[in-house]
Image 1: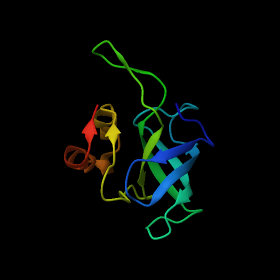
Image 2: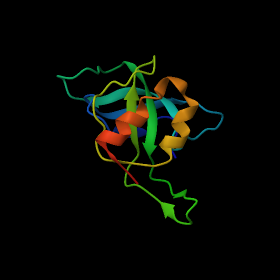
Image 3: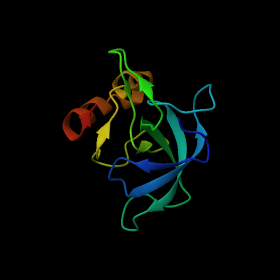
Image 4: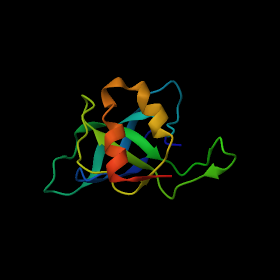
Amino acid sequence: MVFTNTLVKVADNSGASVVKCVHIINKFRCGKVGNLILVTVFKYLHSKKVKKKNFYMGLLVCTTHWSFRREGFYIRFGSNKVLLFSLQLRFVGTKVIGLLDKLIRYTALVYKDTKFIYKMFNFSCKLI
């Protein structure tokens, strides 16, 4: 679960390493896997695309909170991770780094502009 003012790691090569959650875009106070959140850059590499004090959309892909699977087991990741998108929902990076949760395949269909996520996930990362 991610709340406002939570520091979240970035799981792509956009140039940001840590972002801060500003607002969660759903009906509830907490963000879960597959939710869009509004973030601002907290730490970044100076030679990349992202800049500090700019706002971006983030897709939550891993959380440290236990999540239940239909197969009958729970899964938990070591850190909260997010993918960075521009405010027009265009992917900022070019590659996804690390392991991601399988639930984002099902929840990404809600956002119709991000159908290219499936192609990106199939070639660049492993889903658990």
